[in-house]
Image (tube, rainbow, N blue to C red; front, side):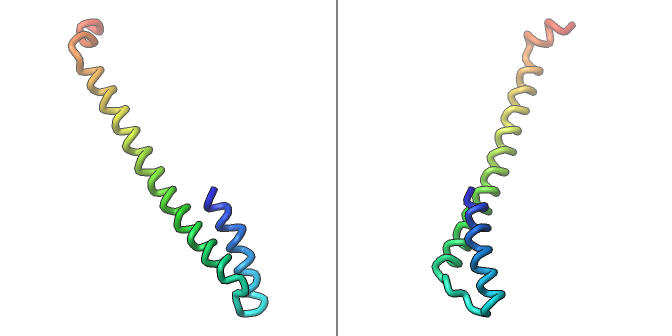
Length: 75
C-alpha cells in the first residue's frame, strides 16, 4: 500500500523535475521517498516472516512424522 502511494506521489515529483529541473513540491518528494523506504522495509519483513512461518510448519511436520504413533500405524 505504501509502495503504491510512493509511486503516485513520486511520479508527480519526477515529472516536475523533468519539466523544470526543479522539484517544487519538496515535501511531497520527501514523503514519497519516506513511503518508498517504508514499503521496502515492509517487503523485507514480509519475506522474513514468511520464511520463518514455513520453517516452523516444516519442523512441526517432521516432528509429527518422527513420532512413535505415526510410525507404528504406517507399518
